[in-house]
Image 1: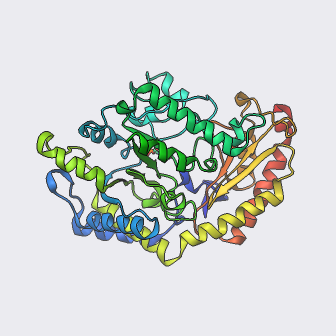
Image 2: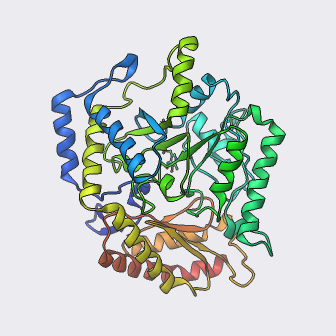
Image 3: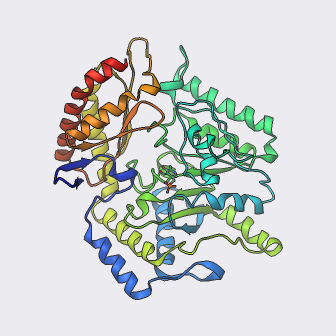
Length: 427
Ligand code: PLP
């Protein structure tokens, strides 16, 4: 749970790095697995039907987890990459080979204040809905649109309840598909629980209704589980948590707890069949990188999942997530600048308001929540001030204990108090 700085001060890392060090720091077992893999077969690639044993074993294990722990036996093949940024790049090539999907993913960005995050390559950066990444680089690429941001607390209208909000969000998606022409829409991508864009949970019924719309229009669904995968939400995957039926799931971060850069895209049997059948006409999908599916990554991921299973870290994520959330609510629910406290498993956030009565938000440019991050750091706890809404997120390693939660929240509370003068000035 802890990292130490150059002055020897210790910090409780309530971010787990970038939502990724799921098993916690300092696990020598992963280093040993890496050393063994390097000694046995330091490298082999995945091009031209080659593969390597650790990665084949990992593919099997990931598919078994989806089958047995996420109710998703329809997922049948794994395409490995080197880091989180790679899972989204194969998507366009797959779409191009599926004649049912002639165009690109479609989403429309409606708000400058909250945005999905899918990475920062040209393709992934286009799917990411963050204006600052788009402006200087002429993004998004043509064919990428952004749907409205389904953050009820922030974008729900006066008098609108959560169910009506969901209907409005899904209605907008439906309209967009009709406007574009359903036959031109390849896929819809979403984080099941938004991470960097605000650490918020989808409004009630959202994915159920979105999936129905996608099914009606024969549009692929890509679940970006780069953050939510491997226990973060208190389930192995958000696919199981929300009973999703994605055609593609993207994975990274928790697959190795970030001890080694490795990513994966898991695809459905339906998609695989299209690719296989199209290969006769177009040739097999040629996609990958020199280091895709690196055997050391495969071995590290296996050791990581061993630890997660042996120490019941997914169950711990559910139990400690509930405790963490309850403690945050006990401590901050009545705070004058706290508008919302939310979470699922060990993925939580406190969103600020400048005025609780009128639900007026802080001026985004004042970055009020960054003051809390800074002061909390001074008190010895690392939390994250998110870039697009005034929310502070908590995503600690999944091995956190009650005592560590108590200590982290006590440190955070002292930091929050110390930030009050700056918050008052910003309000
Ligand atoms: N998808 C999600 C949900 C993420 O949070 C991230 C990174 O934080 C990515 C994709 C992209 O990962 P990378 O930073 O390796 O490009």
